[in-house]
Length: 112
Image 1 (tube, rainbow, N blue to C red):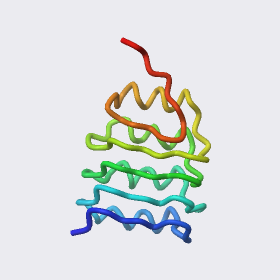
Image 2: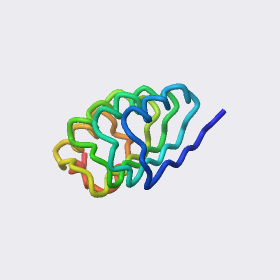
Image 3: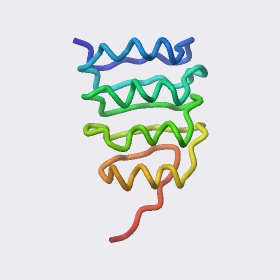
């Protein structure tokens, strides 16, 4: 049973990421500096039922890709340094996931 996986600075691709779908107990995933990870991999990441921490630093994930995480029940921390993700996309995601901490792109949080 794998609960944490770090696949950084390597040649992980979207196709390789798809194989992670079998790791249903995965809680922490770090794919930082994986230049071949795009929005396509987000389909797999969003389907990991126990995923709580996801680091996408220096990947090719965009504002479109992170929206696949809108209904992820367990995700608590998302790291997006040097990704093509806009603040408005983070705001939209946080509206669905108010408990989510996003690092790398600051959401506008209301003071309500």
